[in-house]
Amino acid sequence: MRGNSKIVQELESLYRGAGWNVVKVIWAREWDPLLARDVDGVLVDKMNSTNDGQFQKFSTETGAYIRENFFGPDPRLRKLVQHLSDDDLRHLRRGGHDYRKVYSAFRLAVEQKGAPTVILAHTVKGWTLGSLFEGRNATHQIKKIGDTEMKAFRDKLQLPISDKQLDQDIVPYYHPGAKSDEIEYLMGRRLALGGMLPKRVVRNRPLPTPGDAVWADSMTGSGGRAVSTTAAFGAILRNLLRDPEVGRRVVPIIPDEARTFGMDALFREVKIYAPFGQRYEPVDASMVLSYQEARDGQLLEEGITEAGAMGSFTAAGTAYATHAEAMIPFYIYYSMFGYQRVGDLVWAFGDARGRGFMLGGTAGRTTLNGEGLQHQDGHSPLLFSAVPNCQVYDAAYAFEVAVIIREGMRRMFERGEDVFYYLTLYNENYAMPPMPEGAEDGILRGLYLFQRAPEERPHRLQLFASGTAMQAAVEAQAMLAEHDVAADIWGVTSYLALRNDALAVERWNRLHPEGPHHTSYLQEQLEQLPGPVIAVSDYQKTVAEQVARFVPQRFVPLGTDGYGRSDTRAALRSHFEIDAPSIVIAALDALADEERVPRHVVTAALEEYGVRTEGAEPRLL
Image (tube, rainbow, N blue to C red; front, side):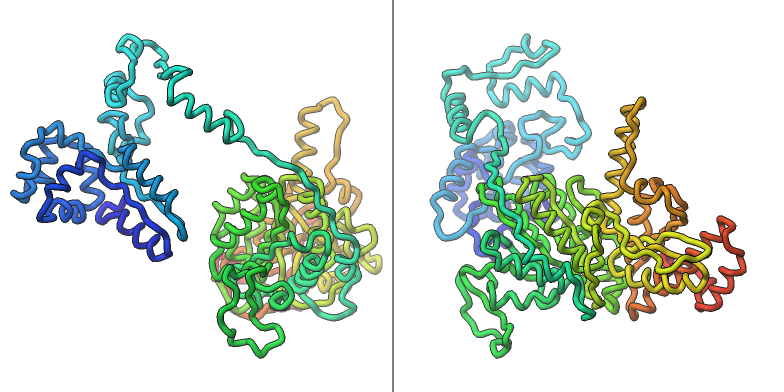
């Protein structure tokens, strides 16, 4: 309801404006004789001019109050109801409580052709539940219906239950009899719908995971050419669309301009879906990669509506169950505009056991530089980590993207697991290396050794890096060598996967106190290595801190806590203290805390790199 206006008119204008057929069920049949006698239209005018808040008040008052305040101000209205008692006025119902009117509305909706129909039914909250409930704002505060209200409820619905039965500790259910028309109708409908309880029917039809040809280019690196992980994903998506086995089942979904994500190559190849085809000549018709729509187009370009795109994503991601046809949706969008805008729909997708890939493009708080607070995402992996069956990955390189998507397809569409994936994609270009030997298992489990320190040094530590922060870690590795520190670089593709594994192991050990004792994957990788561990990402520190208590060495997270800011990438990374000098300072400081290097080494490094030492921390600026 709208206290000072009318929700029905508001909704009607929205639906009619969108081309829907609207059926309104506002007044019950008791009003029909009054409306038939309303030759001057005064009753209709009074109905239309009375707001929702006042109608709620009328639903809780006596017939005398209604006569005085609704009909009373106009003598023509008073005359219209002079033959009705106060009790009659009290029982002038809203249309949503008149089953004949509701039936007629559904009949009209079924018969309507050429447009969808919405039924707007006016009802009273708590109807039939008695004076403590009906139309009252206290509905949520009252937990138990009293004896008086229960008897009034029985009387209003004309249920054949005696006062003696109501006086029992357990109020009886009313059953009209197994052979009654009502029960036979209900049982017939349940039989037609597949049983007494709703159930999920999954006819598993596994899809084969495409072979090496789809992934090969991503695995071998870019040959020194600078590309982004977004471009690497685009190449994988094109290969998947061309695959003879699964290509027609791939559903690319973009709630924005596809060129933002380098997807314009798909315009000509698979075209944009448009139910009526393309009826105009686009302004870019002279371009090779012009905007092309078609009735059989495969790319869903929704316009700037994340909610609409989530609707398409949900339809495709649950098609394996609802239609027994597995589809493979890839929903690509600005990462900042994902969970933050449509979190309820993402949660519902997971709860519905949807399967597919959500790809947060232009990811990172410092990577999408220049667009400030609105676009710079520093927390989406943390938000997605709240969804129980979402696999969250932050990839740095093309081979990581390929390995993650390939495994996701195996799990969801070949093995039939009820999971879905969130994967960050960046628009920063840098050379993509080939996949290190034996790294695939670690990529999927969340951690792999990307690059050992090239030379031994008096001191050794571990650098964790993910996404675009990997470039700063590689630079910091060389800088630390100048300070006699050998730093091994680990690619962390998923802090959430590491955390979930560690929690599962912790639970196992707690429930099996006499053994055998299990060890987490994270501990297996690190327990024999010297620390500390410095973890850097383009996200707030809490993302890395998900694993802090499971790391055997001292753990120091570096991240981008704070709002986005408009500046160059270098300036932003210096500001948030995640650039190579900041990594070096954090490493030296941690070594100094362990008394492995003197404190003056840290002071000298601060001066050497010109690191700001005074003022508020970045998240407060």
